[in-house]
Image (tube, rainbow, N blue to C red; front, side):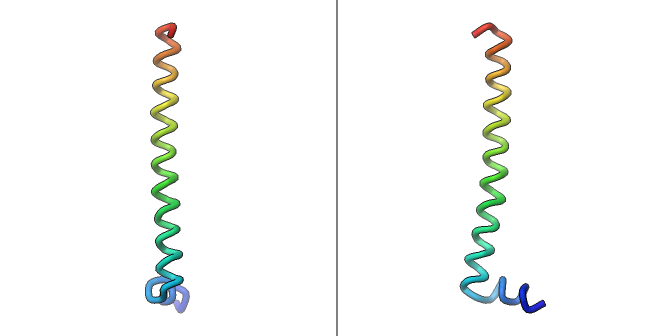
Length: 49
C-alpha cells in the first residue's frame, strides 16, 4: 500500500507514473503507425507499384 501512496504523492512517484503513461501511449502510437504502414505497403504491392 505504501508503494501506491508513494506513486501518487511524491515527486519521484509522479515522474515514474508519467514515464509509465508515456511508454504505454508511445507503444500504442507505434503499433498503429506500423500497422498503417504495413497495410499501405501491402496495398501498394498488390497494385504492382
